[in-house]
Length: 223
Ligand SMILES: CSCCC(=O)C(=O)COP(=O)(O)O
Ligand SMILES: [Mg+2]
Image (cartoon, rainbow, N blue to C red; front, side, top):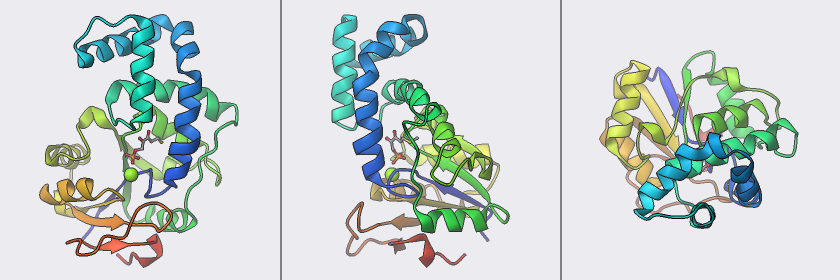
């Protein structure tokens, strides 16, 4: 019997187009000024970029690297941390408002009183909290019992899901994980979680011969 539901954001509860065409360009446009105006706050992030690149990069080169990572959709912790800081201003001033798929909104609304809901996204925990505080349906942040990001590990690694189950305090088989990404689904399944792949026609292809349950809308989920 499922006790908790762990949800991905992009492509699962919210359209990929919002993240790729609205949030990413927003962070791209503001990156340079944000770094120049917040030198102390972002110093550890710039150092991390230098460590990852293995080079003695100037600040200008670090900015270029971060922008290239946005273009390449890198799911990498220092990029996700700084994007979270930049998006804060966007959400708080109303320039960004998170769309939630209606079917996902309705199901999560039902589930929240019966199951514990958690988020696991590449977006930083700060960014996730902003996202659910400023949705088109209003503030739904208190529906969630906890948030996980890349600090716990890659979403494509079995060990990340084992750690999440430990932190939640449930056996893996009591947790249902929903994501649009087949590699994430496989890693979660290897860790023993129940899984459902979300393949929304507007986001990702429906995979033929995928070995686990696959849905096009949350309406198909009957727990
Ligand atoms: C908190 S919304 C921004 C999400 C994000 O930055 C991202 O890369 C989406 O990844 P996900 O793991 O939610 O598919
Ligand atoms: Mg996703």
